[in-house]
Image (cartoon, rainbow, N blue to C red; front, side):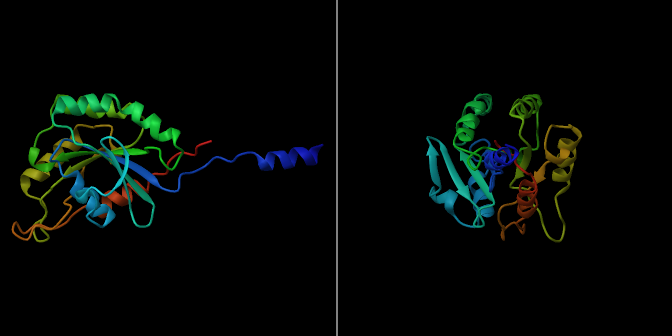
Length: 209
């Protein structure tokens, strides 16, 4: 009997760990999500719209090594629309999770343009609303000007410090400034893509039974 029980236990379904980490990229229209995704996956897939369509307004992209997946949601035209979308995320997250661990949403890149230079009470509440999904949130500061010889402009440094002092429920307690591409005219360079990507890959999605 003991031998039969041992064999039975050995055949029980073992918890699965997803083979990749999937992050949902969200933000307002014009925040630079497509450019960011292209920089991460190493091609012009997002700009060309050739990602795998999942459902209306949602596309999926994957890095060449298959370790990181990016869900690209259609950009919100207004803050009100973005907030409504965040409040309904649980439905989309449940649908993705139902497809299996390799399709589940494991975290969120909430994108904000560095040039906005503001983060008001409504945006703070949006982050807290997103935190109800119980997944890590990376606050991504897109289109952040960075020069190899000078670093960030003073106003960007001040904005980054302000966001950190807000003590938001975000990964590392700080924003991730990124510049998805070089800008020869402005003299700025690509910045922060590897740091953001490695931080996401450092997150271990939970085992699913």
